[in-house]
Image (cartoon, rainbow, N blue to C red; front, top):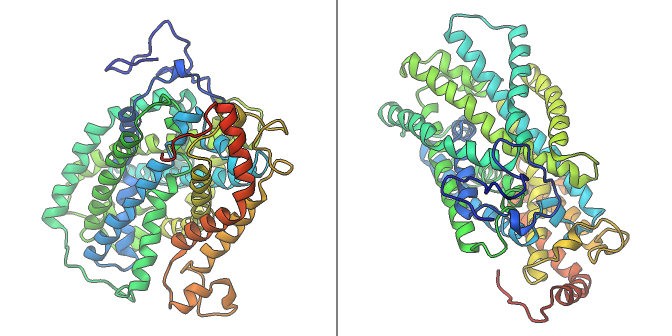
Length: 502
C-alpha cells in the first residue's frame, strides 16, 4: 500500500488502519498490502509525543534530587542516547508484521513470553497512571488560576474526565495516533519555545548541587533514572508501531528518523524543566503529589502564559498516554486474552482509573515515579538484551507465520512452549540489575541483595548489569536451541545463507 503526502489511505483498500476509523488489527500479521507507513511517518508520531510535559517534569526532578544544572544537563544528554536502543528494537516489526510481544515468542517461547508480557503490561499501566496524574494536576492548577478552590469532588471529576478522553486515540488506533500526534509538533514546539525563553532569561544555571550529589556514584543514579524514562523504557513498544512499515523499509532511516524525533526534543524538554526548577516555585512543590503546584506561587512567568502552557500540556499528555494505552492493549492480547485490540484498551482504562485514584489521593509524585522507575529497570534491561541477542543469533530475522502460532506446531515452541534459556537469563539478569540498584539501603544487611551497590558505595549500575548479564547468559545458554530453530527458519524462508547484518 502506498501513501500520499497527506497520509491518506487509498480508498480501494481495506479499512484496517485508516485515520479516524477503529483499527481492526491487533497482534495479528499485517499484510504487505496494508503497510502504508514510512520511517518518517513513525518518527513524526514519536516527535509529537516527545515535546511532552512529562520530560519537562523529569528534568525538574533531577534538580530536586540534588544535582546542579550542569550535572543534570550531562545526565540528560547521555541518558537520551538510549533512544538508539528503541530504534534497534523497532527493526523487527517491518519484517514480522506484528507487535513486540508476539515477536517475543521466538526468544521466550509462546508460553514463556506471557510472563514478560505481564511485566510489560504492568509497566504500561504505570506510565498511563503517571500521565493521568499530571493531567489531573494541570487541571487543578488551572482551576486555581480561574479562582476556584478544587477539593476532592473536583479531583474525582477530573480523573473521570481524563480517563474518558484518553481512551479516544488508542481506541481508534495506529493511523489516528500517527495523524494526531504529528499535528501537535508545531504548536507544542512554539509553546515550549516560549517557556525556553523564560528559562534562559530567568533560570539560574549556577545553582549548586545539594547533599551528596557531587559524587560519581550518584551521577550514575540520575543516569539510570533518565535512561529508563527516555529510551530504555520505550524499547518494548517500538515494533507495535513499525509493523506498518514494509519489509524493505530502510533500517538506517528507521533508526535515524526515530532518534532525531525523540532524543533531541527530549533533551530540550528536560533541559527546560531543569531551568524552570531554578526559578519556578519551591522544591517542596515540585516533589509533592502535584508537581504543577509550583506554577501557582511563581510570579516570573505571566499567568496567561502559564494557563496556555498547562492547557497545551494536558492535550499533549493525552497524546503520549495514547502510546502507552495502545501498547498495553496489544500486550493484553499477547498475554492470551481473547479480546479485540480496542476492547483491551477499554479494559485497561478501567484498571488505570482505579490506580489513578490511589495515586492522586495517596502518593507523592516524585517518590512514586522513582520507585516505579526502579521496578522498570529490573525487568526491562535484561529483557531488552535477551530480545536483541536472540534476533542476532537468528541472523536478524524470524518466520512471521510461526510467530502467530501458540501451540506445539510452532518452530519456536521449545520445551512445552517455554525457552528456559531465556527465562533463566531473565531471572539472573533481574537479580544482577537489582544487585546494582542504588535505592535499596545498601549500607544495611543483608548485602547479598545488592553487593555491587554496597561495594561501590552507592553507584547505580543497574541498567548496565541488567543488559550485560541478561544478554550474556542468554547467549551462553540458548545456542543449541536457537541454532536448531534457525536451521528450520532458513528452510522455511527459502534461504540457506541469509545476510548476516541487520
